[in-house]
Length: 272
Image (cartoon, rainbow, N blue to C red):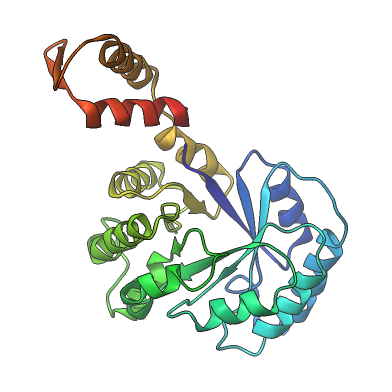
């Protein structure tokens, strides 16, 4: 089942606490876009005060630090080094291996590094990014900044990001890492369009999605959770394929079942 990554602004103790107590897979505490320049230090101190002890939360916790092109990159990493409870960091504006390799070198703990791909350079250099350090096991996609970078408007339909999304999926698969995390959908109240966008990401090969509002958590789970009908069909496929003596495809209720279909069925059952 696809994982849900909920953003929480690093300058709001109330919103961070709320996010950490929701039924989501991961919380990304944001020190970048949601925090203005004059609040960076305050937000950093707030995150430190909340996570300096080895507290237990149901969700994984990531910190999105500021870009290496800013003055706050090293300060954010120093703060992360002082945290007792953190599962990883997200590095925005990842365009090559530079910021990833440097972060991995400076971090004194074994945490995951998730590069956020938000530009044409990041997409075209994805193979280098994925192989930059062993702490990288997946990337995330930033569709709004990507559209800005290539000089077009972000659209609900997503035509402008289709190629980039496919390239991230294929490169991740070829590198043997986890599938990428889909971008946030910036329109909060449009459930129908959100569902369509999430389905498109899932069908492209993404596994999970970043969200910016708690109501979107269940919408992601709705798309990625197999239906009862899908599970029943998958169990039939597995039973028939494993109990039959065959050398190729099998006819099951008018549909041809071969090994790839069987393997997909097993994957679906395993993820449920």
